[in-house]
Image (cartoon, rainbow, N blue to C red; front, top):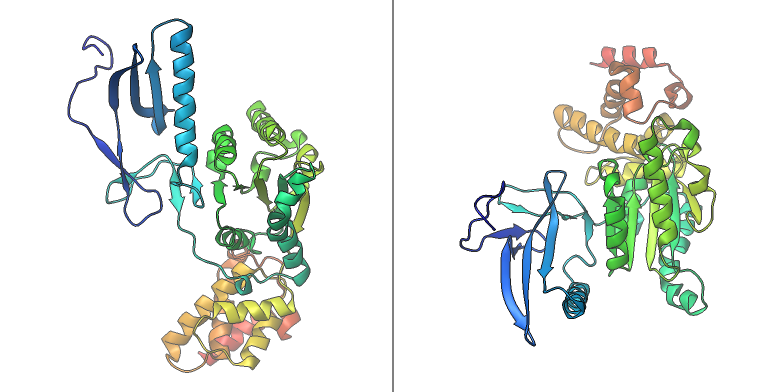
Length: 393
């Protein structure tokens, strides 16, 4: 700690960070501190400070200085074991939904771990075919209930699931449901920009178990090797495979990987039990599912049965996300024109015209309706519907 170094250190008052841990109030954590002490005649120093990775603060670093020799080595090892026990006994991030990303809000709260406050999703709000829901319950909730017995039998406690299906079919929505229905489990969210931190995520998954590790859009790092464009992509794939294999069989970790393109996944990941144990398809909603989605996403807006049926017929081949947006736009047209009472069919038709025809083909794809055929449901073409709406206007 000399002034002549490239990065001089000044001795001064203690400084603290306000770290968000998911509670109403943040926790004050020391930024940098130096302790000089001794234990049974052995002098030692402990330095705690920010850990900087790639130019950004990515956690806390603890260093210990001891005299050379076996006594000092044994003390340092014991010291870090005690730290690990203390952190392991803590409940700071257990049961939370977290990701490794630096963030600061307007109040100055920050930290290298972001706590996500996901909205609560009830089971009745998960609109999927019954066989999909049953498969989901059996591989998550039922598996967790029987996990200890499975471990007692000497069988693996790990579980790997692959959620696949077109965009907007409810994969992320279902993950929110699962996160809210797994008390005591820490959920780790890995998005595309964080794949370089896979090793840290796996370390956290082991440390905070029972845990759920979610890798969204896994095809970005686990596509078939023949489709890879550079060696770094294969490095990330190998890291993912090695980390999944490196977990102990008794690790209480559930992996959930999501993809919109299952056909592009590397067979070494998708076709090997022990990494992926169950693939669960999220299909486009059927007739019954679309009716439930209309009811769900209309919220407090009253929708007559005949309007619900018309929407169901006109949205064949669309995703849940498309129906959610359709109900929001229909409500907007309803408020602008009618204002009160139940939703009218003309508001729905106006919303459909804007989403499917006026916005063009790109807008249709963005909304998850590139396979919809309005003529199948309504008996008229897009041009006929547009003309009808204009005449009404």
